[in-house]
Amino acid sequence: MRRFVSAGPALLVLLACLAAVIGAPIAIDRMRAVDTRTSIRLAQQTIESDDILARIDRAVAAVADAVRPSVVHLDAATRSARRFGSSTGSGWVYDSRGHIITNAHVVRGAQQVRVQFADGRVDLGDVVSIDPFTDIAVIKVGEGPHLFPVVRSPDPAVSQGQRVFAFGSPFGFKFSMSEGIISGLGRDPATSESSEFGGFTNFIQTDAAVNPGNSGGPLVDARGELVGMNVAIATARDNNGTTEGDSAGISFAIPLLTIETVVDQLINDGIVQRGFLGVEFVGRFPSPRPVEVAGEFRRGVLINVVAGGPSDTAGLEDGDHILAINGQQITSLGIIRSIVGGRKPKEAISVEVARAGERMAFEVELGEMPPEVLASRSRQRIEQVLGFRLPVISPARPEPVVQVVVPGSLAAQYGIEINQRILSVGNRRVESVRDAFIAFQDEGLLNGEPVQITVLPDGAPIGEIRTLTIRLP
Image 1 (tube, helix red, strand yellow):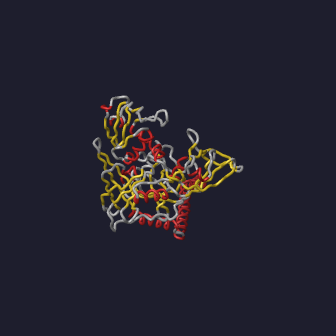
Image 2 (cartoon, rainbow, N blue to C red):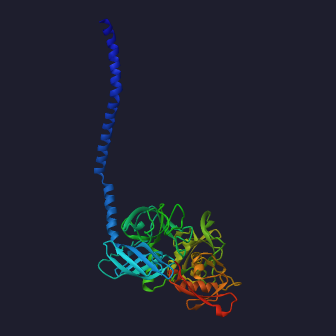
Image 3 (spheres, helix red, strand yellow):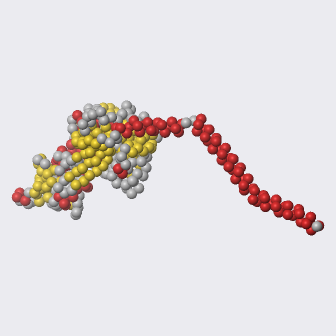
């Protein structure tokens, strides 16, 4: 009996310890559950008291409802003696007359374009005109009540950080919508692949998800108003993809101001007149560099002035550094070219320059861009795609004699050979390299049209003239 009594307290202590070991976690879990339940209740009360996220969702859904009827999906078919091809992309309704806007690279060379609207209706569209230098094309469909023109922003100026939405058909998923912000302005992708032939960039950069198939789709702001058009993406593999690669959070759009200037001319005139500043850029690889202005360093592009040109008339001088045009800071040559080339002749622009350490401002009335300037910008792309090379333009060797043909290239397949002299392009006789590329441009080579050329081996008798038909893919 005494042994039991003496052992009792020890057993009680042991049982208490066991209860604590087993019960404490249960009690802690219950306390945590109470805390979590309280946090959930407080969070729900916060959500109920402020429906800002629900209001944002409703606003985004309203943007989709407002824009989607204006978006179209495009299927473009091309046929030639050598190949059949097709491409898909996006576009948007420009006006009630049936004009649809998209990228030039979506419909270049297309014989047939199927235009599908958000309600399922499909029309056949005709390519009205293409501007390869800005990668903009106009398609025409029949008029009707199914046309809902996109609302264009009355203020084309946009800001970094501004919310935007991209529409289109990524990977064939038609009438999709993605959201992002404007990541940067005045972008000039590293290579001409992103900007097609012309090098007119000045792109809006966004982080909205844009993929192959989004090309030509509208980019709208938080009011559902158009501020740009999707044109290119940068990928982890390369940074020149208009049609290659997946979204990596960097996409580019053509600004609304450029779109309106080009589209109105394409619709009304079928051609685009471009402004000409009348300056030459100094150095083999000119780029903005630091220049001291009133004790501060700004970035500017060193220029020489074309005698008798618009800048010369306005008072600019050799050795000036262009700092800004129309208030936009110059970060690349592409910005200058796109701002100037996106405006019509006789339009006035403000040019800010640095001269002898001082800031000076001029108003320049633009002239009309000479055709040889456009031809020089398209030359690199034409030679790259076809796989051949003509001499550098110089007084010593002006004749268009083929110097290089890449084995297996399109040029080789078409029958172009080294030492052939190009005699004519279309019905136009050419005497120089400059003449040849101007003729390529005028005959529609950049628009995907087949172009006939006559060639003769250098020094061969006239009887060996050959006629070839070339076409950009």
